[in-house]
Amino acid sequence: MTVTLNLPKVYTPEEYLNLEIHSDIRNEYLDGEIIPMTGGTPVHNQLISALNALLWFGLRGKPYSVFMADQRLWIPDYQLYTYPDGMVIQNPVELQSGRKDTVTNPLLLAEVLSNSTKAYDRDEKFAAYRTLPTFQEYLLIDQSSLHLEQYLKQGDRQWLFREYDQPDDKILLASIALEIRLGDLYEQINFD
Image (cartoon, rainbow, N blue to C red; front, side):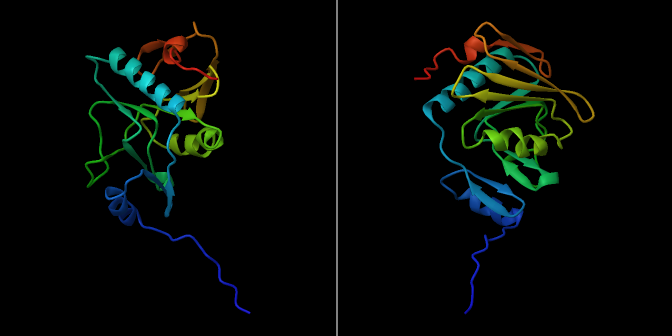
């Protein structure tokens, strides 16, 4: 008797990028594997939109670029292409060599947590993000309750953790010198 194993196909980064150009959905790439990204819930999208507005208005006239959900990020140490929910880059935006669609120098990254992604976003994805030399601040935004976790780089391999769960909590985004109110982020969110 012969047993056939269905091993996942391994793709090169170049194969992934060529497929991604023609794909109708966004896909992450992790060390040879292509991982389809699921669609977000209305609350997920409302939180991303609110974060985008707060960042965009707060950073107008300052030397930063704000990106949401559809901007690809390359993390070479992990061979990872991913699409963070939110990203702030201090200008100039640096692109992956030979690419016009993939950034490499985020300062602040944000993820909206879902039940299916929260462990990955807190663990493996955060570990990958920490290998980027420009990365200074990480926000994890809960979509099922009024709750935000903030990680702020303090030194080499040292991060300060803070959490917020009151509408009047003020979140100082130290990497970009901007303060936002938790209640403003969650203003139109209905958890029912």
